[in-house]
Amino acid sequence: MGKFNKSGGRTMPELNTSSMPDMIFAILFFFMVTVTMRSEELQVKFKLPSASEVQKLEKKSLVTYINIGIPVDPRLGTGTQMQLNDKLAGIDAIQDYIAQEKASLNEADQQFMTVSIKADENTRMKYISDVKQALRKAYALKINYSARKAEN
Amino acid sequence: MAKSKKKVPGLNSSSMADISFLLLIFFLVTSSMDTDTGLTRRLPPPPQDEQNLQEMEVQRRNLMVVLVNSQNQTMVRDQLGDEWYANITEMVGRGGKVGLKDKVKEFVTNPNNNPNLPELIEQDFGEPIGTVLTTADHVISLQNDATTSYKAYIAVQNELVKAYNELREEAALKYYNKHYADLLPDQQEKINKLYPQRISEAEPKNYGGGN
Image 1 (cartoon, rainbow over the protein chains, first blue to last red):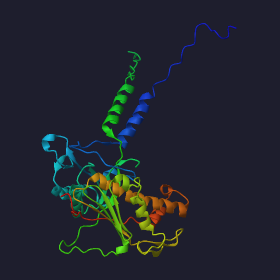
Image 2 (cartoon, rainbow over the protein chains, first blue to last red; image 1 turned 60 degrees about the vertical axis):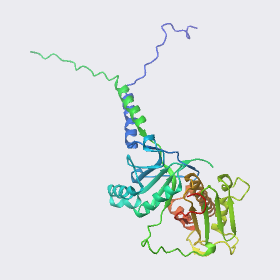
Image 3 (cartoon, helix red, strand yellow; image 1 turned 90 degrees about the vertical axis):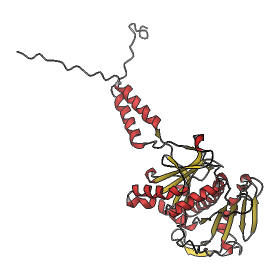
Image 4 (cartoon, one colour; image 1 turned 30 degrees about the vertical axis):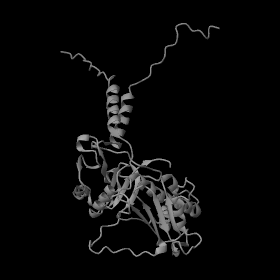
């Protein structure tokens, strides 16, 4: 019966970890390639409205963002403000901003440019309408009302 | 001078995994994987001549007006009459009234050829839909007040889109025996042509209350 109690005890075979760095590098490169870095810091805070019929925005490089909300820094006021790129701006700055963003795309893609309006759910429609009118004038006609996915 | 074989000292790579882990974690933290979602709309091009804004000629029966006022109440008006929704709950059809979505669906399809609902026009949509009657000229005009909240506006937009999405889903099941999401792009396009989204976002007006 000595079959089952071998003296000398079996040692656990060691796991070969030499390929571990390679694996980690592979994951690392995957993330480096698929990911876009956070480019701008938000200066306005907003809570997006929720909707059930939302669609995903594809091709992030073609999307221009307009953030509308209340400034994070209370010294900048407590009313609704708009952030274009990394500074607060007025409605009249939209046309220049859109023209600039459009110019940075290559010509074939310009017609597919989408403007994503990220606005706080308590914003007055007056503000949104003004933004929409400015976008129309700037010929940025594809817009997207940013909203959270929710069942309702 | 016999060269003594020098051994190249092996590089200790046991910390390599740690370094690459660090890099990995750095990228995980700084990156944003979140995809943006939202309701996509197309704005009309700007009016060519500010002086004479030509009004689009729409037959009365083809027009449905959805108005969101400053108290976030919704009013729907078509030739069948008016409907008031005092809040969002009623608007989505949970307050005992027929929801906005079902009203829009009835308006867009006009199943019983009601003379007070949009005109049905015969149109050929190609295989496998064939020639069917649709309300090709219907228009849903979405109007809001200056002080309407964005939340209420999006809720109404969402109901409109939902109505169209449900109609498209029904059509997809009927003609292709598949869910709309599983259709090929050109098949989806055919269904979209069958039920085109004709939502007009008018310039805001100040309808009593709020300024």
